[in-house]
Length: 395
Ligand SMILES: Cc1ncc(COP(=O)(O)O)c(C=O)c1O
Image (tube, rainbow, N blue to C red; front, top):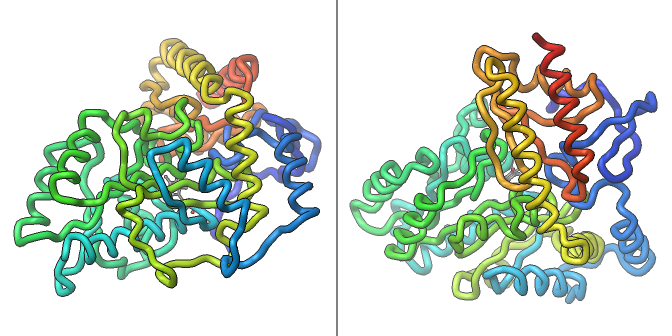
């Protein structure tokens, strides 16, 4: 169906940070399937691990114990502040699971009246996925239009705005407990690459603690080392009660996860399920990605490369002040902000494509860099050169 406005190329092969199209043209990949291909394309370790897994077992039902799933859950809980994990297949599904958990928390722990129903507070300009509840959580009206009525029980407030959050919370709680959860991205990716503000998140944490409200982070895009820390919440120094993962966790194999602290694990057998979620093949991918991040010291690598990219983008902004407003981001999720009067991000991405560089817009004004975490210093320098050429081709 015609759901995508696609760029006019067909990618048929990849190796590391390079992709080739059906005409044999080569592209430097700063999209990575939108923050998915953590280890780059056709990675040897991932390929071998998956080939071995295919030779043993691909899929069994969650009716039975799945060792690869238990191992991946153990790898996530050992490296994070969480204790329990539910696996699914995508970011939207992970957020659906989080939303159901939040509602159960509201009913069970906060005793929110069934008449009013629990509320979940999320940020304007957020992005949480395209299923009906996840898109309702998404604070961007353009994604709601034509799909009303939206799911009940969501309220939005401006991101990083402490006063607005306090005032919405006070309104919602005026007649008694009403808010089940706050769902936030530590850094808003799709909404324009806006890093979370530490003081704001600390205050949200404090208020959630005071009221017994669940604080959930959506780390679908920023999690799994992309921020320069293994988990996005480590960048903020604020621990959520639960978080969601997808994208980079499987390095290209679909997998999603909801991880929670023990005391918020309200799910009981029958509450939630997924046929494919956490199957041996997808979990092998997750296990290999996490193991390779550690073995290749990719967290440190992302810190270094992120700094280099940030500096290169700042220098680019300084060279073209009439076109560029600035740059922002964490690690290897960086956004180059275009001036309103400059060509828009989709046009810049198309021009970059013509130069042999893949980048992805985050809204009309931001060009997003989300390369494989294995990208080299040389490749990053090349990427910024190609982007500069693309910019100049448009003026
Ligand atoms: C922060 C965030 N949450 C959720 C999603 C949805 O993930 P998926 O497309 O796997 O459903 C995305 C996708 O861009 C995202 O960036």
